[in-house]
Length: 289
Image 1: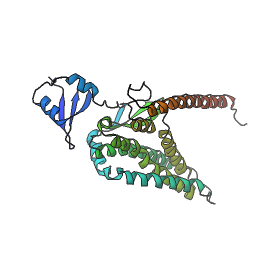
Image 2 (image 1 turned 90 degrees about the horizontal axis):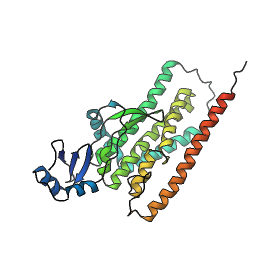
Image 3 (image 1 turned 45 degrees about the vertical axis):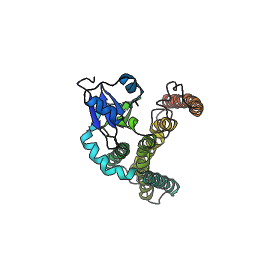
Image 4 (image 1 turned 180 degrees about the horizontal axis):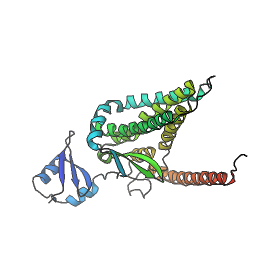
């Protein structure tokens, strides 16, 4: 028998979502109706243990509550169909190529005043919000309900997050869409600012575009808990690459995980070497007289 804190909700695809003790499970309609009617089916514990487990969001401080995120995700959902995501990513790559290949203009750059600097930082934050809304919109399109958007610290680096816990309950194709939507929608914004900065010789626009593209590049590296990491996990059909794979995992998944572990060690070593190099350069720096 379910406890009083359990909650059952019918979904448009015919399945039911069970929220129980802080966890969520996707159940067949017949089983869910039996639970709703007070019946306690045999092997319920085994069924719940075998159900997909959601990802845990890194909650720190909420910026946009779920009641604000969900209407925005609903309006943005048409932009998360696969052709639209592919077009968005392609246009972003084209803009980046144009911005990097464009020659510098002949006009000298004007000094950056604090209003321009504030606008540049605002553009970076808004691009990050668009990234998280992309995840939320893709989740909404798959039939899930996105949660809040907030900010937090990962390795002392400020990041935004979106609660897409219910992505774990979606089919694999929809989970892949949730993983890819953020980068695909954020990339054109960085490319556009980069082109504008080159065309108008504005260092604040170049800096904002570079910051956005740096965030995009970071999310394409699968060696931390980035979008690329979850994309790789969902493509292989495994819950995590950091833990041992299930006994029935295919050989391909085990081979890719082995290479991933090697890449993660090299990635961590590269970050450590870069950090040490920065510290050494800072220690040797002397002001020009």
